[in-house]
Amino acid sequence: MTPPPFPGPPPLGVVVDLDDTLFPQAGYLAGAAAAVDRAAGTRGLDGEAVHAALAAELAAGSDTGGTIDRALLAAGVPARRLGEHVPALVAAFTGHRPARLAPYPGVAAALRALAAAAPLGCLTDGNPAMQAAKLAATGLGALLPAVVVTDALGGRGVRKPHPAGLRALAARLGVPADRLLVIGDRPAKDVAVAAAVGAHAVRVRQGEHAAAPDEPRAWAVVDDLPSAAAVALAVLAGTGSPAPV
Ligand SMILES: [Mg+2]
Image (cartoon, rainbow, N blue to C red; front, side, top):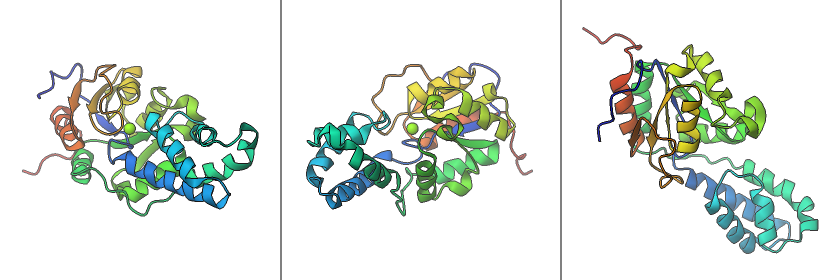
């Protein structure tokens, strides 16, 4: 579907989300959950029960906080004993370091094309060490030298749609925040953070939140990152290198 005309002056830079925009987050979460199961087993807990409870918690939403506490309670661990187990299991979860996370098809080429056309950065929420590990495992790090992890700026309170991260990234890219085009999978985060600074967004309908309603509405809605890059390239204000003559 062709998007409507761009609703303002053309964007001067592009910002991409990481999880479920550049790679499928589900595979990462499954690996981190398996690390927790193993750690639970070594602590004398019922690894299978913890596995089932953790899978249910992650399916209910992967970014709510307190996931492991709730999973242990659901697996029958008494509340008074959470304190002796949770720190080690959280460490197992956050310490998961996959060697390789395959990006969605065509992502590397799409990022290369965007970077050739305009300043390009990545804005992501989450534990900074985990986000860095994910990006490294995708092999896309060299294509995204400007990365802002919101939690590193001010913890969970400045996660998207809080505008602090996008403003910080705009400053690093040397582009006014309201002239960035944000590409991401989550309307409530990626589309909303763009709106919070007066910028616009392309929603990529994939991953855990693929079925979420278009609220707030993005300027364009597409099915994958190469399609998002195509609509972005069509509206960028020619900020990249001039075409060869
Ligand atoms: Mg995402």
